[in-house]
Amino acid sequence: MPSSVTVVGHRSYTCRAGESFDLLAGQAYGYETMADVIVAANPDLADVLLFDGGEVIDLPIVERVETPDTLPPWRR
Image 1 (cartoon, helix red, strand yellow):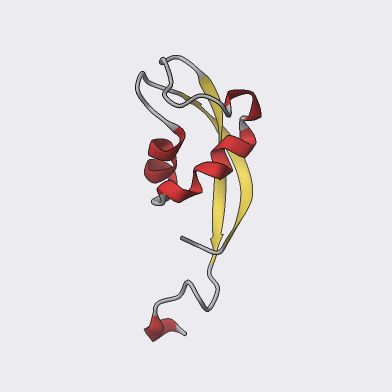
Image 2 (cartoon, one colour):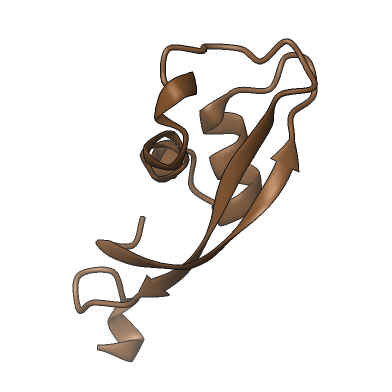
């Protein structure tokens, strides 16, 4: 996971039944561990484990900031 990210925008996303923050983070960012970025943008839904479907959330658009500890060895 990138050690830091910058939110550069937002878009609306309508959740489907059974989706979760970590599933959405994995699909949107490639890292399920970035679910906290989505939760932070949707604090009113922070206690939701699985969406019922139809909830419209704010999905942050992020820019990954590469740092030496996140770069592969050949790019350091």
